[in-house]
Amino acid sequence: MSNTVTLIGYISSELSYDHNIHGINYYKTTLTVCRESGTEDNIPILLPERLKDKCIDGFVGVKGRLRSYKLNGKLLLYVLADNIEVAEPEYYNDVYIDGYITKPPSYRLTPNGREISDVILAVNRDYGKCDYIPCIVWGRQAKDVSHLIIGTNIRLAGRIQSREYNKNGETKTAYEL
Image 1: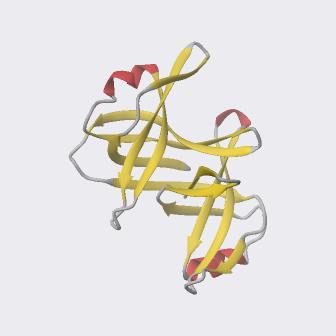
Image 2 (image 1 turned 30 degrees about the vertical axis):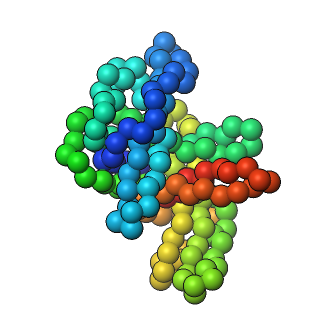
């Protein structure tokens, strides 16, 4: 599959109504998944009404697809849940995508000297639509990716990360693969 997400974590926000499309109500919540470092990633989850009652206290596993949409000029990411089930108390964050490079990768070194490339992939979905997924590639692969051209098809395996930043005195959250 060209876009699969498997997460295990705990529901950390109230379930709230988001929208209705084609007669199906969708709800949003947040799943918290801890990294080995102890840093928490708070991942937005969108789920159809049929899965609403499966959002319980405690650990849950979520399987779905990474999706994107633009709102007020900003690209927002979320996981569209296909299934939710009770899980053992552990953390898991695994994503596989197959997409096409949409703009030249941006290669640089971090202040600590680590290689990094920013890449945006267009991941096709049904009905002629696609999702635009910002990806961060680290290490040796960052240099390899930096030479690829627009339209190159690549497959990436990674995890969804959230990070907070300040812009004009306001705290915002960015999501990346």
